[in-house]
Length: 61
Image 1 (cartoon, one colour):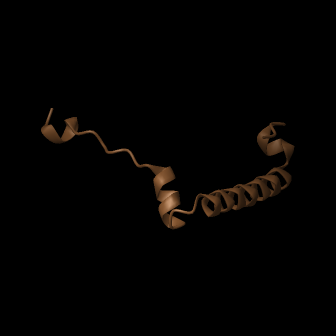
Image 2 (image 1 turned 90 degrees about the vertical axis):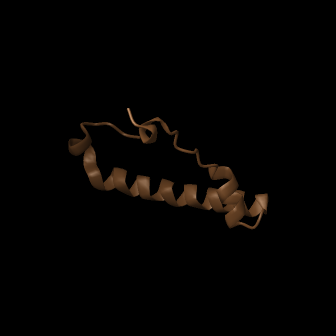
Image 3 (image 1 turned 180 degrees about the vertical axis):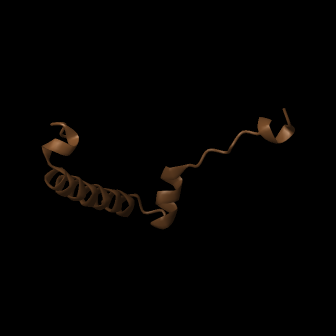
């Protein structure tokens, strides 16, 4: 094994990244994450309607 293969990949601190994007404002970071979640829920609901039960064999999220 080479030395490169033994190196660990540094872990990202996603929470710190979100706070940095919002200039350290935790309330704005939470609002942004909640808005993103709401958009994803809407997209999932649309996908459930469009896919139909035959494609997913009755599975629903």
